[in-house]
Length: 144
Image (cartoon, rainbow, N blue to C red; front, side):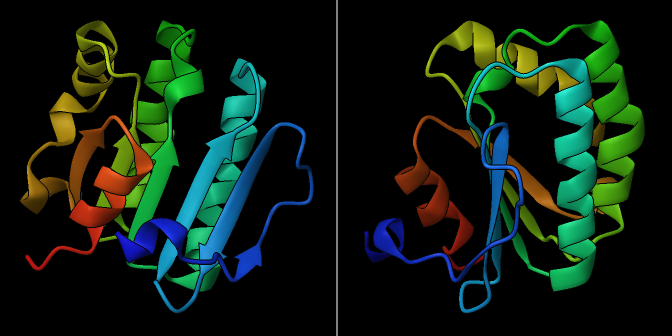
């Protein structure tokens, strides 16, 4: 797919060692990728920064590579559920694609975290999990 190779027009982050947030105005896409092991503090800082970027840029699509988030604990999941997801639900995002590990166990963990917001009417955007970036981009830009 051509979007797989689409250039991201702006790298937003200032600290490339922990995570990167990239924004493409032509694609109305913001993308976050973690570059190493993620701590609770690092997760919260990255997702808080992501919300700030979303509020500033107003993209329609979010792509998150969550493969490095497998080691997070219950407190981290609670923070995501009670802080990040409510903020995301009031944002401009209409589709949220997550790249996860291709194993069933990882999908189950992430899906259980987000299970309470699966209703599009409640959450405000459609969310899906994918094993690779190309499939995620295909879904993000497919006609609804």
